Structure formats: C-alpha cells, structure tokens
Length: 494
Image (cartoon, rainbow, N blue to C red):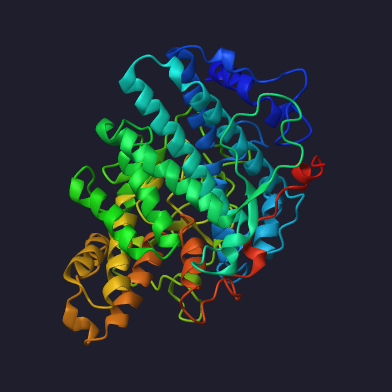
C-alpha cells in the first residue's frame, strides 16, 4: 500500500503540500499523462478507495466513511453527561462536536474536508482519462465505481456541510460546497471556487449514482468494491433524505428482492468480522496492516469506541442509564430480552475482543461507563450500509406513502426485531393506530443503528415534516449542526 499511496499523491499533491486545500502546488502540477493505461488507472482507483474508506494516513488524514462520517453525527446528536461522557483529554478536537460549537479551525473538520476533495480530484482525473482503458467491460466498471465514489462523497458532505434538503424550501438555494467534476491540473485553476447550492449538489449526487448503477449492474456484488447494490442503497438514502418515499421504496425493494444479501442470525454477528457478512452491502475493509487507526495512532472508530487494552482509549464513554430512559429523546429503550442492549460487566484490562459476546461491556478505562462492542479492534470490517437498514427504510417508505400498517412493512420490521430476541408484532398489537406502528419503526431503527451515525440524519430529515423534533435539546435544523468550511480553505480564496 505504501507504493500505491505514493502513486496516488501524484494526482493529489495539492491537498497535502500546498497552502489551500483546493489549490495546486506550482512545482507539482497534476498531469493526466500519467494515467495512460488501464493498469495505472486501476492503481489510481485503488488509491481513491484507500482514502474514501479512511485508511490511516497520518493524524491529519481524516477517516471519512471509516471514521468521522460516523463519529461526527453521533457526537452532534447526543448530549454530553446525559447520554455519553466524552473523554476530551484524549480526543480534544471532537469537543467542538460535543459542545455543538464547531470552529472553522477545527482540525477534524479540516482533515476530512481535505481528504474528501483529494478523493474527488483522484476520481475526476480517472474519469478525464477513462478512454485510455481499452477493455469495454473494465472501462464501464471503472467509470461506474468512480462516479459512485464521487456521488457518495458529495452526498455525505452535503448532509454535513449543508442545511437539510427540504422540497420547495429556502435550503435548496443555499450555497454549500465547491462542486468539482473536472480534475484540477494547474496552479490557479481555482482561486475562489463557486459554491454549489444544496439543490445542485443533490442533482449531481443523483446523476452520479444513477449512472454508476447502470454501469455496475452487470458486475453483481463486485467483490468488496462499490457495486450496483451499494449505488441503489445510497440512492435509497438520498431519496429518504429528500422525503421521496416512493423512490426510496423502489431502491430498497431492488436490493431486498435481488436475494444478493441476507440478514445475519444475530445483530452482533454484523460486526467485528474479518470479511463482509452476508448483510454488508458496502463496508470498509481493514487488515492488521491497513486500518483506520487505533490507540497507537489516536484515530479511528476502534480507538474511540473500544476501551479494550489491545485496541482503544474508549473516548466514547456511554452512560448506561441512557439506553433505557424515557426522559432522553432518542433513547433505544432496550428491554431485558433485546440482544442489542445487553451488557457484560465481567471485563478488565486483560479482556480480549474475542471474549466479548454482548452489545456493550464495562468501559475498562472508566468503569462507571460502558463501551459499545460494534468497533472493538482495528483489523475488522466496518459496515457502511447493512441490509438491516434497507429493510427498515422500505418499511418507513411504505408507511409514509400509505399511512397504514402494511403487511410488507410489518414483515420488514419484524425481521429486525426477531433476530434481536424480541417477539414479532402483529397488526392487532397497534390497536388500529397506524402511527403507533410508525413509532415502533422509528424506535427499532434507533435500537439497531446506535453509534453508526444514522440517527443524526434521520432527525434532520424528519424535522422538515414533523413537529417537536429534538436533537440534543435543540431543533435538528439549527445551523449549529452544520459543519463550517475550514478556515484553512477559505483563507486561500481571493
């Protein structure tokens, strides 16, 4: 991977060595001439994946899908000293997120912005030279993966750096991100980049992901790379974020009915795997040699979520009472039977990850709190999109269109409940109240996806059509939940 990373820097020197994150070093202009054949282009594409997934690239690298794109939303959506007790001594850059007061100089904001545009420039360079791939099948696959990467990144970024999409609302015209679809090859090409509106970014996202879906459909699951199904899953997320429930149902249905994926037998089996599980639609591939980081680097999900001696500092200290408290908005309200809420109290500094068989365990470094077992070591797969999310998305999309307790939606809900040890629900359990079914659906999603960065985005989109939505004691649409463009970026604009 080291040689490979050096190669990819030929295309992205601007993001590492120059003053501006979107500027180009005069002595290191980027040349498309390097991408003259399929081998070089494939290597560059591997580099894009390496960075997209957040494999450790120094403390200022940013972990994107493999780290902060999960951690930022989690910290923004939770109250410190109420749901969690964040260790700001060992992870001070994240204090801004806990305080809901994110500075333009925040190093984590800057590092993820920098690395995201590094990836975008890489895939733009590949796309500009795609005709150098002579094999038609390989050309279509590479183009599809590149457009998917760009679409995924712009979607993740517009959700974090932009206001919530609201059809017909003023947010659509808000300038939010530089929307680059061509490679930067010469110094001075961008001095003050034009910021695209929320609507323009979403349009580009949908164009990229739709095109990628068509190009990748014949590639099936496409190994561990982005596949047709991953594109469909992201289009599903986009549709939900836009409250386009009809489209969300279609995308979800395409994945479920394909039979390409299946739920694992227990929710615990969806995590800490050496390879993708049967429900992983897209995941970060980690090995002992290539990880997003652990306590030795001070980065990565394992460092923050795991308090085990072998891997992390356990900075995400979870307050156990928050898991079953009616006084906390968004509490999963785990019952005693729910596998996803069980805690192992018999742990100490000698406990290994292989010995943990519960969803939570006593935080080894702060025994008055607990740790999640979802990300225990840095050499395991990190799920990005799981089939469980698709089932619950389809159920929600069906409900929002019908406002009824639909049989398919109920089946989707029960598929997630029963494998967690909860009894299946019958239509009669809701007493004819369709909105009671909706409440169960929302609660189930909170239970299933704790600490995966999903609740934040759900709260923001639902706040556009539901009253009295609360996120960490505030309106989810409050501007304090929007990341600022880094000062290191804007200082170079003229």
